[in-house]
Length: 369
Image (cartoon, rainbow, N blue to C red):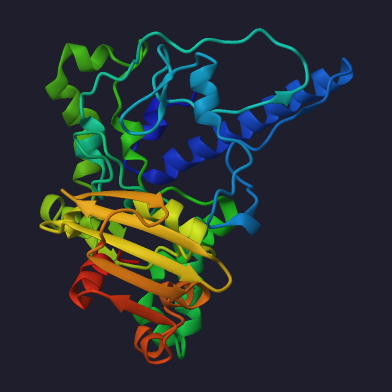
């Protein structure tokens, strides 16, 4: 479904969010009508939501029923830009996606033979938390913590701020009046994105690219500069690359240190999630191989290699480890959730290490939460 570009580009994000919500509702309605038409013709069909609601019993693991973006790519609707949004060759990335799943045999689509992304890097420059690197790497946790502050994990963090406050004064010291009102607004009218500037500034697409080609300077001044200059809170986890990025690139924006609510519930989920929360900037000068041997509720061996500010994870114990961590799986997950003391775990021998403890501290610094 096409969205109105000028709404998405508005510095007043209430305008952008109304457009996101209405286009999402429209996508769900169209999917519903298609599914009903298929049903009337004797075929089975379902239309998973465009976005929310999701299967929150799975959170923080994959809660969505279907991944719309790879389906759209396979169907030839567009290609993925470096900002991780689908770019339609005509309408650009100002679209929302819906999917209908059916037993009707349909003609197979074919992916585009080109990518509309022009790699202008405006999305790199516009992102307030530096989630998109010029080389195309993506910092999932930075984007999730800020842009989705009032969704999922950010909401649970807000609830915990309430629970941890002794009284109203204590709560107001933790959460400003405007933040409380913003959370109420999201609960009442639909969760609001804090940025989505990567979509707003993207000039790709036949219907979109004209002003950019006419004058890149004018396009940046008209579209991107109001977003860059906006004074606003930017939500980051303390000690992350995102925090450093905001302080250096956007000193006029207000850094708000929060927790992201990403508490893993299994070692399997931990292994999947580490690449998404790994902070390359915190891994400078670190070159080490880690072995993790988990026992108890989950029997899992992992090898984690960190070097040249990159992380690789593989099942099993391979190569010679610089540090070997042996831990009860439930205790380790409790430690990550800040529900268990690592010192207690060492004393009770629920966690043991072979190798320099300094390497364990360096490892933890790569995953601030």
